[in-house]
Image 1 (cartoon, rainbow, N blue to C red):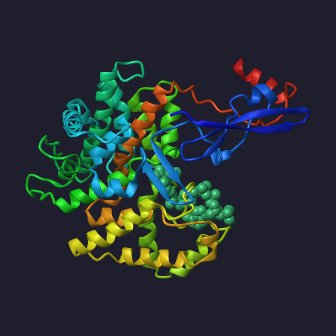
Image 2: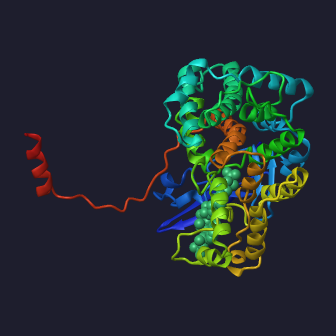
Image 3: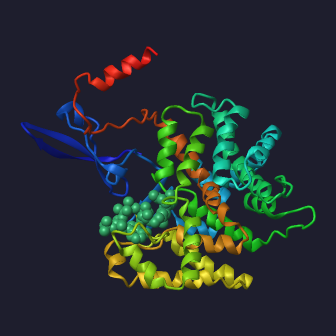
Length: 436
Ligand code: SDX
């Protein structure tokens, strides 16, 4: 999709250069500095890339000021209400919603690629009890390259197609197996007659002695939760996927890098950290104390589930999840005191100038843990749920990065260390040590 262009002038010392300005289809403007160093000797510095666009992308659009999120142009609320996660995975990876036949073929491909290699099952026996499932997931996904070769970027289109489906499907099986192993129950295999989300719930909760009733409401809710997490343009873990993938690393190692990045408490790990924080505040009883701590510059405490690098308005995903909390807990007759507390926190924050001035609203992680709890998902699996949902997004960006022949990611730096040192006595001393 071509972009419109404008230009900017940069004056520096005795130089004046004209730099192109690219304009995206939604009007976002970017100063193209690809020729900056050659023409001026300057590089830019932007820790955390707060002001830096790393690529052109057609996958997801976010307007952080207006709280807009669209996958391939379709608003997230419409997809959450009308599509399934498999539809959205197809949309992200292939660029359009599937026809009936395309959806059937894609579902078959996901099903055919849902079984984990039997030799990989034994890996689970080697993880220590209590190992966090995100570490297990990243390890197992990285190991997939040993069992399913032919996934480097130069392989055939058919191999790419199958490998992408395998990642989206098998990682779900690995997650459910990791949970079963963690509770000492026999693993439950995927079934060809169940949908993507129903299969996951069945693998998680079915048991030879306690048959699991697959509730349509739980399947609907899981589709919604997976859909709203499926992609979010150049977030930390997707940036990791694009950076690792730019070195032409195989798909599985690239996705394992995304899983590792997502596990951080400032990123996808926040959904588990939010619930732990709500439990702590609920047990303590003094909400005002924690609000004060969150506002205190000298206190590292942050109100997890609030704030966002891009959204300076309500995260549209948080709105969907908040509404689903009301719906699902009412439908299942569950009363969770943490939801009442979450509402109190949001109401308090929304009236407090510290949070208002910094545009700190609930993000996608603030309410999701309430729903996972209500569905019987254990807390240490919350971020795994985020990772499963984000797989199509990571795969879509990996494919886009490859089709764009992206250069290997290798940023510059501004060196602020010591200038050249004379050979010091220390070095002479080291040299002598080598002789011993
Ligand atoms: C995800 O990027 C994505 O798209 C990510 C994601 C996705 O789908 O992939 O949306 C998923 O990661 C959601 C975010 C989950 N993380 C959390 O909920 C952790 C809590 N939030 C913060 O750590 C923080 O808001 C971040 C990390 C989310 C964003 O950090 P930024 O953009 O670097 O913002 P900042 O740290 O510069 O904060 C700006 C100001 C600061 O105050 P001042 O120095 O200006 O006085 O806001 C304050 C911060 O101290 N602030 C908070 C706060 N978040 C920011 N103060 C209290 N509590 C918070 N949660």
